[in-house]
Amino acid sequence: MRYLDAAATTPVRREVLEAMWPYLTGEFGNPSSHHRVGEGPARGLAQARRTVADCLGARAGEITFTSGGTEADNLAVKGIALARPRGRRVVTSAVEHPAVLEACAYLERVHGFEVVRVGVDGDGVVDLDELRAVVDERTALVSVMLANNEIGTVQPVAQVAAIAHEAGALVHTDAVQALGALPVSPAALGVDALSLSGHKAGAPKGSGVLWTRAGVAVEPLVHGGGQERGRRSGTENVAGAVAMAAAMRLLEGEGRLGSDGAVPPWSAGLAAARDAFVRAVLAGTDGARLTGHATERLPGHASFCFPGTAGETVLLTLEQDHQVICSSGSACAAGSSDPSPVLLALGISPEVAETAVRFTAGGPGDFEGVADAVVEAVRQVGSLRN
Ligand code: PLP
Image (cartoon, protein in one colour):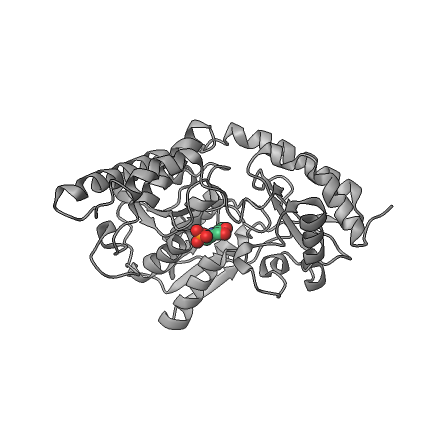
């Protein structure tokens, strides 16, 4: 089996499992307990916080552990907007993950915020002129993702942050898909909040982080015992936090974090393999198009539309006849038969959007031999040139 759905999730890495194991067994205590059984977990949690902060070039007090990317996005968007004394407007892009878009919709519906969803060009890049025009003194928060899960496009987040700050707005970025592939340095990006999810990068599902710049107020969404400095009540998932830290340290050691703002060298090799894959697929199929930006995209990400096919048919053929596992777009929109709003935002017609197939690799070797299978699968479902 060839697994090319790393954007949906990744397996837990052995080293990560080994790091978290003690906190699921011997060190099972509650980190808030005042007796000695709680001491080890409390130390483990504090160390995990320091490690994650260090990997991001941040301070431990700026880290909030969450149950993943969705919660981190919700806490950032709702928490920051609700805590800000100024502005009743939130600005985001048309291609955000539902975790951001639905959090914005909630602010609009329940709290009367005005939400502006800025458009993107044909490559999925946010329109900076439109952004500039709508971000003003009424704007509490701007949320634009670092890299898109469906089309791989990397957004000019540093420019977004500069525009937003000029108007006095705070900036959040969803960096869930970027972890391990692109620099995720909050300082280099110039943002005020950044979300990460563990399961996209070798830690378990249900682990995540929200980084917020010191001094940024966040209204908690979950109330209770006041854990995570009051930002996220509930007994901490110590093993999950330790896993997140272990995964990030591994990525850092492999030169995949680029936390100083530099592009990780690891990404270049993956991008080269991806480019060869894309060239071979486009050369072998008729009318296929790459969706998203050709170069400003996640290194392991290749997404296509194959007009004349149905995306799901290509997907099934790849799985059944070629043992290639990929996806028709975003796993998060699974179950939905509507064409992807992200592809529609790019100006792609609903008919063509329904032919979308996404291949996302965890390493350069993952693409080997897959182009032939894709070309053959597309031919099988009836749209090949020869
Ligand atoms: N943001 C992006 C860009 C994602 O791709 C995902 C997951 O696919 C999420 C947020 C949600 O993360 P989680 O699955 O950890 O809730």
